[in-house]
Amino acid sequence: MKTLTAQMSSDGSAWRLYVVLYGVPDWPTFRWERFGPVPTGAERRAALAALGYEVAPDAAWSWTEDSRDPDDDSTPVVLITAVAVREQEGAAA
Image 1: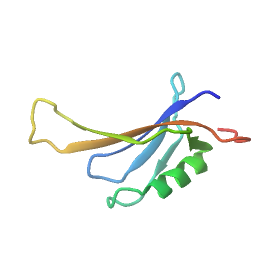
Image 2: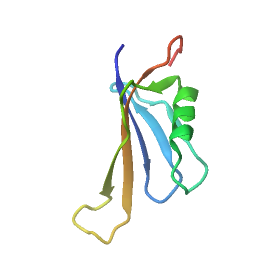
Image 3: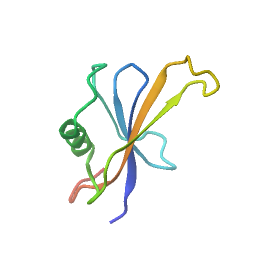
């Protein structure tokens, strides 16, 4: 089964989770209407399921940080996490 990448990010605003689909203008996206805390693993799995995806076997979330201006360390940090996902069995994603 083909794997894709799901990412979740926040720049201090609400968290967004999306599945990266190259060549598609609108990626499947889930948004939490809160700024914190970071969505739990269970919340992320539920959001992926709502989008028709699941975490791939043996995949783990990896975290990184970025900034709007990498040359200025006083700008807000953007937290990004990613994981390999696949379509759920029988899902029409």
